[in-house]
Image (cartoon, rainbow, N blue to C red):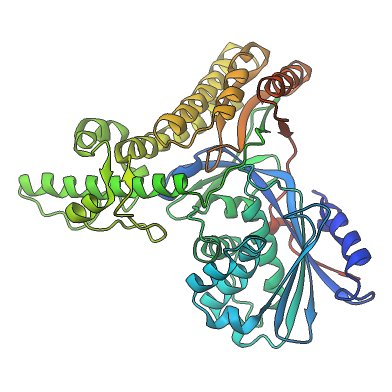
Length: 481
C-alpha cells in the first residue's frame, strides 16, 4: 500500500504555506480540496508519441500539488508559490465568464505574456472541461487555487503535465456534472488544454503518466491515441533514473514544433506514394494503411519503398503547393520555413521500432537470473537508448551538447552497471534518462558523472531517482484550513 495523498510530497509543504500565507483566501476551519500529480521520466518513446509509437514512461517523486477553496464570486484566483520564483508568490485573477466565452486561441494570446504563461496550464483545464462538458455554465461560485511544485520547469520531466493533471483532478470536484469517466479522459482533457490554451503541441504520454502511472513501474502506452498496455516491471536490481542537465528546454519552442510538423509532412508524402503504388497495380487506395500513424509503417518497408520519395528538406510553401496540408491538428505548415522532412520521418518510424525492441529486451532480462544472458539483454536495451539519443540529435534535431556529454559519460562507465542513456521528452536540453543497476558501484559512477559534468560545463547536474503514483491512483482529499 502506498503513502496516502496527504503524506506525499509536496502536499504537506503546500498546506503549510497556504495556512501561513493565504489565510484570508483559505480561512481557518474551511474545507480545502487537495490534489497532486507527479512529473515523469521519458525512458523511451519521447516525441514519437504524436506519431503513434509505443512509449515507456516512469512517474517521479517530484510532483505538483494543488489546493482549492470556493469563492463567493465567479472568478478564478490562482496563487503560485514557486512556479516563477521560490521566494515571491504570484497571483492571477480571471473571470470565469472570460474562460467560458472566449475562444481558446484568444485566451492563448492573453496568457502569452511575461509572468502569465504558467497560468494558461491552470485556466486551460477549466476551459477544456467547459469545451467538453459545459461545466462553467452551471458553476455559481468562483475558486481560489494555490500551487506548489517540485517538478523543475524546463527540465524535460513534464512540469506542465503535472500541473495540469493536479489541477484537473481538483477542479473535477467542483463540476456539477460528474461527467468525466476515468483517468484516460482526465489525461486527454489536460492534453487539450496544453495544445489549445497553453499552445504547446505535445502528445498525450506526459498527462497519461501523471494521471495513471504506477510507482516503480514503466507506464506502457501505444499512442493511437492512448491505448494503455500492462505496465512494465523493471528486472530485479535494475532501475531507471534521470540526470537533469540544467539546460532549459521548451516544448512550445520552434524546434520542437518544426520537427513535429516535418514528421506529419513525411506521413502525407508517404501516403501519397502508397496511393500511386496502388494505382499502378490497378488498386484504388481509399484508407490510410498506416491508420494515421507513422509508427505503423514497417521500418524495412520505409527504408526500401518510401524513404527515397521523402525529400531531405522542403520549404513550407512548396509542400503546400505539391501536397496540401497535413493531418496534424496542432501544427500548421509555415510557408516560409524549411523543414527537414526525411530526418524527422527517419526518427519517428525507426524510434517506434526501437521502443518495441527495448521492451522485449527488458522483459527478457526480467525472466533471467543474474548472469551473462541477463546482462546481454540489458546491454541491448541500453544500446537502443543510445541509438534513440543519436537519432534525437541527428534526425529529430532536438539534441543539446550538454546532454550529449552526459550520455557519453554514462557510456564511459558501462562496466559500473550503467547500461544506456538518452535525452528525454522534447529534447533540446532537459534531462537524460539512464538504465542502471542498483547498488554502490553504480552510485559511485553516477557521482563521478555529476562531478565531471560540473567541471566541464560549469553547470550543476541533478539526479532524479524517486518514484510515486499517478494522480488517479491517490485521488483527491479534503482537509480543514
